[in-house]
Amino acid sequence: MADLQREEGSTLLQAERQGEAYFAESTNPESVKGRFYIESYGCQMNFSDSEIVASILHEANYQSTRKEEEADLILLNTCSIREKAEETIRRRLRQFQTLKAQKPHLQVGILGCMAERLKTRLLEEERLVDLVAGPDAYRDLPRLLGLVDEGEKGINVFLSREETYADISPLRLDANGVTAFISIMRGCDNMCSFCVVPFTRGRERSRDPYTILAEAADLYQRGFREVTLLGQNVDSYAWVHPENTETVHFAGLLERVALIAPDLRVRFSTSHPKDITDEVLHTMAAHPNICRYIHLPVQSGNSEVLERMNRTYDSDWYKERVEAIRRILPECAISSDIITGFCGETEEAHHDTLEMMQFARYSMSYMFAYSERPGTLAARKYKDDVPEETKKRRLNEVIRLQNQLSYAHNQADIGKVFEVLVEGDSKRDSNSFKGRNTQNKMIVFPKLDGFRPGDYVSVRVESATSATLKGVII
Image (tube, rainbow, N blue to C red; front, side, top):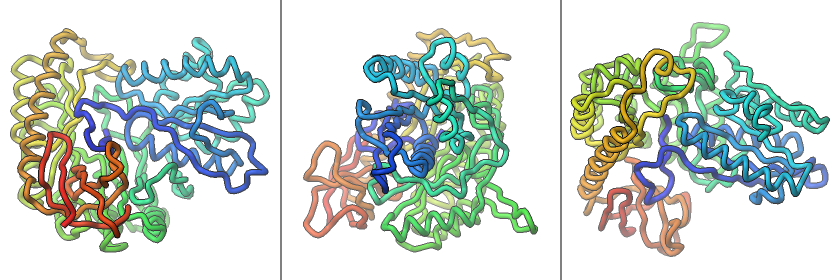
């Protein structure tokens, strides 16, 4: 699961970003067919996909709006990673039914993982939506909208083995003009037993690297100074030229993006412990503009649980990868995903997870109580046998430890000076800027005349909480 932290003070428990609406001006207001309002939930891939959707709709002469009550079309880009995420979407869809009663012409649709998984129920049984489009069907949205206009249901959840949207220039919705996502691959082949992603996003396929480099170079020319390369498992990126033997793996792609400009920061998410190589780590070490931060989900610190999860590594393998990161990139921060209460997890296994957290010294983590997802291998093969109260108690213990680790991690930065990319105003104080250092830590600092978003500034850290660093420009 991709890293989700975007603003200072983010709760460590936040499992999915809440709905975020986007806006972009139409280039030709006289030809506007209607206004669309889009909210995105879940991982960074969904937020990146929403920019692809906006581009497709923009080309079809739709204009976006920040206000749902102004919309003729409301789209929710959804997440199925947990039951709670789906419940959130359902509540939102029911709210839109009230608006739909006032505006009979209003069309409501869902996109993304939940669209693929619950298509029939949402369209026919619950009748909450008019339109369903899976992650590989966004090009078909104009046709689907035409069907809805004619009184039919619009549905396309076909999963493609080729679709990467490589030729579509994403519409940077409500962007800060400084940071941007670039999708480098789609789908997943890992088949973790708890995860729905392979079923909702299809098989893994890598995007043409030349289109990735062109997109990154274009963003740099437009003033963006940080790109995040996105994929369900970026380390398994592998593109083979269709006409010759040229092959590009992730380390090679990472280096090519880093070479676009020395002041273009490069991040990536998410890495898989079984695939991250020393070659990637050495590539990071060779290029200062590749950020010293790796999101390396462990899920559990117990080897037997990892085997049931079908993670294809054990705790010793994971520890060896952490040690390799420390050896090659001593200043690198590591974050993680952790699941408590997975099928068959004993108290001893839970304590192995706590021990792993202390070993890895995560800078932050996304932490969840196990939520059984229908259709997964775990749902078919294993009994969800850990009581809810035990899951929650173990989750609270994990959260408590992570808060301690994050606090210690951040306290160690007091007095240090970091190069920070100014992203914009602090959410809580308009007299302060916010920006992240190379370790992906958010730093808040008072504004000084002459600086603006997109600038690099040297900031000395003066205080820290478990979530945020505070400092001053020097």
